[in-house]
Amino acid sequence: MHVTVRVPAKVNLQLAVGPLREDGYHDLVNVFHAVSLYDEVTAAEPGDPGDSGGPIRVMVRGEGAAEIPTDDGNLAVRAAQALARSAGRSYRADLVIDKAIPVAGGMAGGSADAAGALVACNELWGLGLPAEDLMEIAADIGSDVPFALLGGTAVGTGRGERLTPLETTGVFHWVFALADGGLSTPEVYGECDRLRAAAGHGTPQPVASEPLLAALREGDAEGLGRVLRNDLQPAALSLRPSLARTLRAGRELGSLGAIVSGSGPTCAFLAGSQAHATDLAAALTKETGICRSAVTAFGPVLPSEAVLHRTTAESSTRGRPCDADER
Ligand code: C5P
Image (cartoon, rainbow, N blue to C red):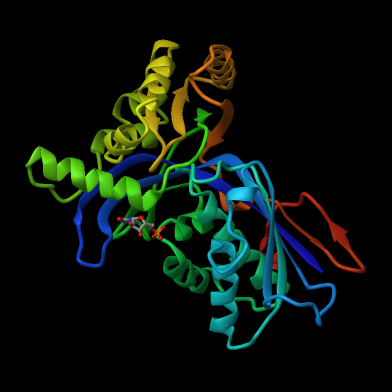
């Protein structure tokens, strides 16, 4: 049997970073927004149970695949291992990850793959674990993994793993400018601490932006564009100064808002409509040196919009939405 899950990327609409904690993390107010840029994670029973390799193996395909570890450093492998441990059995699975989310791009691609592996292996192994159990395992894998299971738009507190879904109206249209090469999330947080220490002023506890929550509630793209905020942006710009030009180009080309996505280096631009997003993406890629490529996407997307297809010897269902009896 094969189970394939489609998992969305995220952009952070507000990433408010508090002081460094003793455990090496930062307290956050993190407004996550899932967008229609997906990786696909397939979990299959290994063809030959006597094969060499660990019980969970992974193959990664698509752009940037060569940079992704295929050993225990792979978040999807770690997620599947943690799920098997929680079930108390030594399950086996071959995972295939088809990447469309930029690698080390600040869009939580690795976290999406981990979430996809949890959902796919839960189904493959017939565990039937409820969403709250998957959420707990997800939080141990990484701060962004619980949101990748939840989707939509949500505010994350703590290190980003404690989620409250947010009410939103309508659809927001985005352009993502992809950069050459990734940025390391721990390095960007470290640079954020360094810049703050050098500036010599204290770091307040993070607070959710009321105008941002109101713009989301009202479906007000112009209002949202004005209040997008990412505290990691100065650090990402310090490590990758060329991003300043990318952001400036997007603003000059009429985006409603321009921001580094998460720890970067992907830049996110809010557009007023799908047509506006398409024009903006074309304009960003027309001139050389602004970005490697640009893709359009919309948000929020919900897990129920994700494709789950499952193929057994007897049946083949493809492209159907996830629903209760398939989970
Ligand atoms: O949780 P995750 O493994 O995805 O975090 C990767 C790194 O990002 C952490 O090791 C830490 O350096 C940084 N981080 C942080 N504060 C957070 C989330 C992540 O400092 N709230």
